[in-house]
Image 1 (tube, one colour):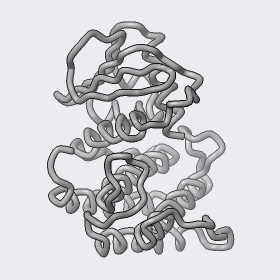
Image 2 (cartoon, rainbow, N blue to C red):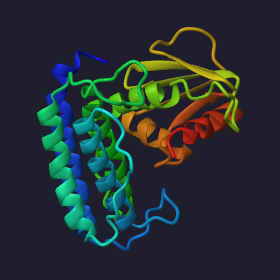
Image 3 (tube, rainbow, N blue to C red):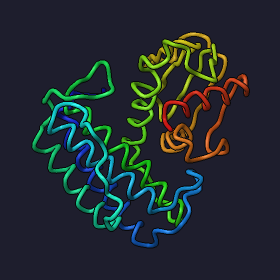
Image 4 (cartoon, one colour):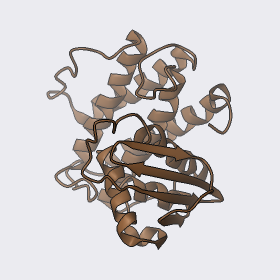
Length: 249
């Protein structure tokens, strides 16, 4: 992290409020529009998904553990009404929890409520882009949030202990460097591990670089290869992107 979570909490809450408000605003432009980056999904699918994610994290913060059973049956609820309730509820739950409450997370290095401040802000921006792309009204991402989103996607999403059984169709077995807005990460991956370091040291098979928002959205599969620049082994770039997709879908 760039600075202690207590200092970042306000930033994440501000971004969560803004991104979730924009998602709801665009959702009201039409729920039936197809989402290009998520085949088979409509704007309504995204709105219901995000509402369910928010409400799930409200319960995680309340219980300090995964709720079971989950989810309740929200099928009869109006999508936008449910979403509005959920976005208010997650902000209230985070504010009530603060950043130090012990709770369940999927980050092996962080079991505090502060984890969810960051995760919910970034969940919101990715899906805000989904509904904006559906209506062709894409707006910019805060550069600091995009850069932080790259960091979060690389660890814990990609670099967590998920690969020990070799459960991947893309073993990669190479090192890749990612650079955006003056910051670099080096990812070394094989079939059973992914190690991420926040540096530009060592030889790599491929490099990926560009503006933070473009790299962030490319990593999440919301932009195609024309959004970024790359050097080195093109096959490694594609295998890397496919490995990322395995842990983000």
